[in-house]
Amino acid sequence: PNSVRINFTIYLKVKNSAMKLLNLKSDDEDFYFVYYTLKNIKYVPQSHKRNWISKFSKLKVSSPDFEEQVKIGSFFKQLDNLITLHQSKLEKLQGLKKGYLQKMFC
Image 1 (cartoon, rainbow, N blue to C red):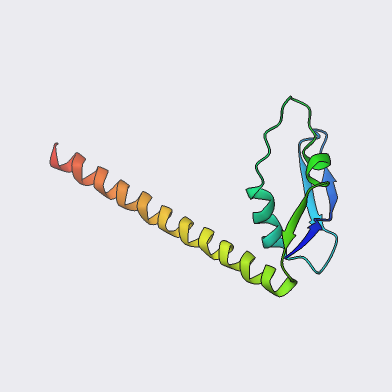
Image 2: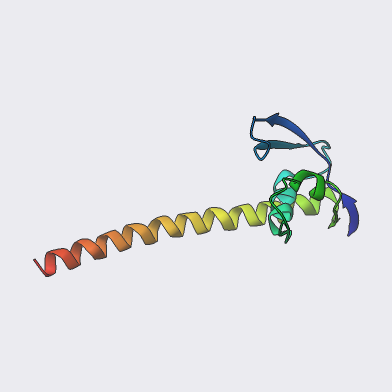
């Protein structure tokens, strides 16, 4: 894998500087790959100073070619979708269980 700097543009900056909308500058980077890469970076701020963009824009990460990025990004997106689906099913089953227990002990 290559070590590259992730390039993004800030499209929206709300009055609160902590709110930003990022977009990739290049078409040779997969959005979901970059999204999951950024989510996985362990960064703990040492103060209240808002420097997320300035810190992250200087980081270099290992990055495979675009085709591999698409496969990796898609894989993790599908896992997230599967997790959401199962969480929804779990919540429905927990509600059903609660209803049955209430009926049983009424």
